[in-house]
Length: 109
Image (cartoon, rainbow, N blue to C red; front, side, top):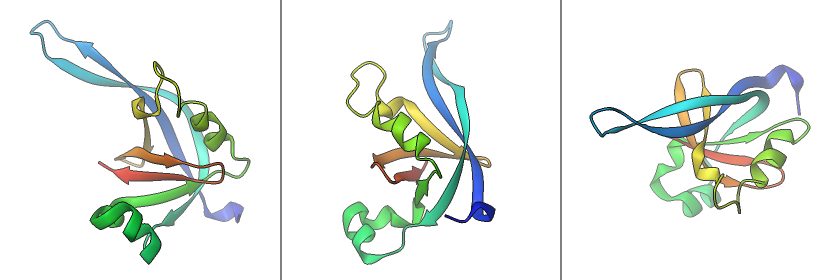
């Protein structure tokens, strides 16, 4: 992994808060910034797995695999599930599609 190709992303958790009028808003709490290497998913295997939305997909991997280790603990949790976590790159929001021990696949919302 080349250190000069690392970008900073923000891992955030989402919380639904009920407003006075009864509607819900989503608030994001930042967990921690991470340095990751970014890879676009454009190969045929990824296209067959994720379908037409492969253009919105990215694969991230962190140098010490600390982001992957943290998210792997959330995969089988019932209360603090992986679906409550989002990754922010610049001004774009990404939801986590899959977590493996060596990488994370995310999709742009």
